[in-house]
Length: 168
Image 1 (cartoon, rainbow, N blue to C red):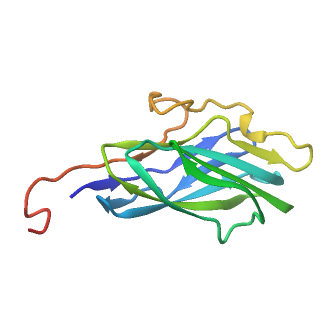
Image 2: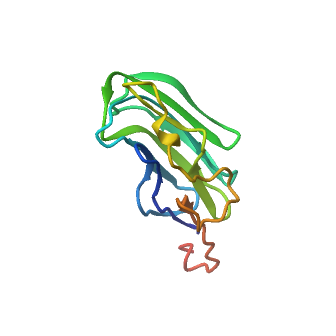
């Protein structure tokens, strides 16, 4: 039996941020868990986002759900080689906290992290400027120290060896 523990992450800039939710989840090994990918632009209207979420090979992407979002244009939606790439647009600009997608994962290994790649973007509708890259200090890869500015979502697997814990 394994236990997954997920902590939420905010990758913030002065005008826009990406968020992964839930804040905490506990699951058994092999079970699927879902993470909502959100964008928060505050009061700034945005028209497009491109979120790149890095994940290790100890996680398997089970699916990407694009329903129930404020973004009506989909230009990229794939997961491969440790990166989930989501690119969405809105015909009518949106602001505040908006859902981009829900990603389902299954865990198959040791402790892992999910984090946003620094090449993610949030496009302001007034001037097409990327507001995600203003004043940021993000994780560039999966080996960066977690004491930096923005902690990653952490997925922890804890093996329990007793037969009683496995229901045997």
